[in-house]
Length: 224
Image (tube, rainbow, N blue to C red):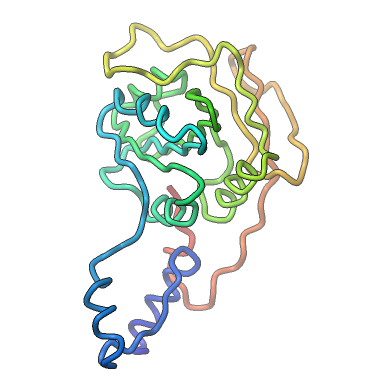
């Protein structure tokens, strides 16, 4: 592997596994030609807020993970997670550039660079919000806990439903969506820090991140 490719491989660790393949070898040529333009990820791009509800109603036997982002494209990290959990979780992304969808769902509009990760449990169409770090290890731990049933995904009865259209609401919804733990192995600690007296924020324990290989670039620490 050339030094340039080796450096690029280190920069993509641990988000993308990279393998050295001899494309000049006759037995590898066919596979190379077929796969060179295919980047695997299973993410539904929801252009309009009205597409979110029908999406959550499909494949109710799987949890749905929705990213509300202001970016034009799905982040690399979200594509990695979508590929990693493609058989067990439905992944989607919605560009919420002005925060209207967030407000309609009971959340704050958010800053320009703030992304929100929402989890709609199995047999449900109401979301719970992930509040851990938007990095590979904490998010992977969270999705693992969702799949093994240890994540705290209790949703209040008065939870705001996913918007059915893109009409701007007259006022932000009163109910506040629940927040969930990103780590199943340690207890959550509740505190009354929100300005809303009806909201309790659960602080998830910090997940230690594995150190990046020497010489790696900032891609290894990519956030949503």
